[in-house]
Image 1 (spheres, one colour):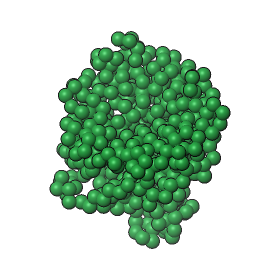
Image 2 (cartoon, helix red, strand yellow):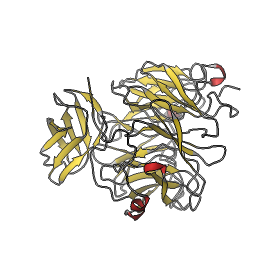
Image 3 (spheres, one colour):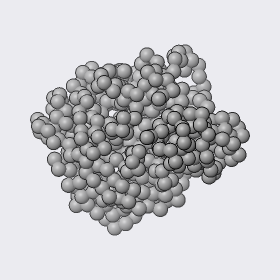
Length: 473
């Protein structure tokens, strides 16, 4: 082959809710924004939105904008958009160009992301960059890839419990087929692994997706091709990697169980299993899969086009315990779907896109108001993409900027209605806190606290975190 990206309900994946309950639940879909290309960008491709400390959602478009290199934007829950930065503003796009992936909110309140092109590297159109941007739009290039240290980063970064950022490039590196890297907040980059290091790329190649850090402290990800099975250039892999770069292949896809996991960031759900999607299989139109901590692989759902096709994005777990995702094609009108998977692996289509609404490429995000938000890479008034919302009738909650920390560390809490908050509890233990704004609280991990959910007592009622906070030794 030639060379080729302590839980609340331990052991339970989803809440036990019947399909009829989901069907009866209020479902309101709205298009909030139509991108117009030149003014505010177009084609928010693999991007999923992320909530900032001000309660707004932040994202990227991969193209368009005043300088035609894509944009960083913020949008309110009502659809008011502000373009924060337009890429390719500098000569030869030294500031980066064409951001494909999502932003990540850092513990310092800034956003971190990547561009697939531009920068000062030696590639024909630039090798891509890692950047930091403030909520007001001040952009800092932290690193320009040069080829030997990778190029074309597609996936989102993840800020690990050590404070560093970890990510992947889809190409370049020692063997030419992508890398996994670590980068400090100051921009010092270390290549941890070069893919296709094994014969016939048995270790995988071209990781389009980013990494996640699981509760065991290791990182998990996928490669688009490579692996032990033969799909011309391999069908792709699932792997785990230690913080020092020791990589272990957990699963090689073989077409029968799926193939070609694309921009799919993985998810560790409340049962501690890892979930993701593939864009293809030999007999279906893509799959949803899970792999347990014991490396047992299971196909959760195989798409048949009527219920969706070619899911490029990963999954999220909603506050109801169910999994939510998107497909780029298929459904009632063939332009993709929003779906949920409930207990027992049953898939329910929540919305089918009709072309005028576009086709979703990235994952959903559940904002702390309880609604889901996403983007399409086409469609809308100008056929340049949209931002949409889906209200499933779920209530507000609080989210954690980082869901792990040691006693004495200060962590951020996102939400709404925080003015007048009277207490913050970590698994029942009171924590000292500061209300920074109506949408952001800083709290200190208290002595004696144990792993569990964070609850915030506000004048409007008590809000609970969607995931547990893990107290580190």
